Length: 239
Image (tube, rainbow, N blue to C red; front, side, top):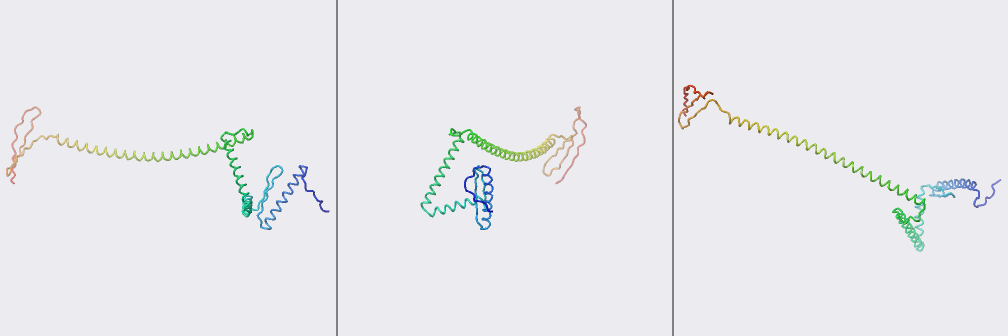
């Protein structure tokens, strides 16, 4: 015995209505999947329940199906000038509405035109502002951390350069000290050579073709008594 014919009308019982919705939803999803596989068709299905819950199915993706649907509708509108004019009028009206919504949202974010918002709307606006502030602070902290790292890197490079310069200065100081030391030693040797006296004085008589006579003088003793005169030594050189 077959099933009786079901009257198509709204089911008053909420439990029965929910059960029927679940069964038929699964059935239509199954049919859509079979149609896409058997006929190589691009199928997209969107269902909203009475409670506002979303159910969807797409053989590829919902976005792809919607974009393709939009392009197809645009091609249909282009075929008829009047339809195209109405399409662009609707598009302009939609854009004006979006602009108005964005301007109103901006004014509300700036703390203006809040009279039309209730407690829930104000709470949502507050949460949105807190999230925005959190994102801004996170970005600011990241920029500061990056800048600190860059400054530390530059400071390390400058410190290395300074250490290299200090080493060069120390080497130059050591070289200067050695040069000064050698210069002082040479000056001291020169002073010693100039100030040193010998106990014997040699007198050389100069003259052309004249014999050279060397005389040896005995220095005085410390008590000032002159010693006996030593015999003279004569040395004659013939040139």
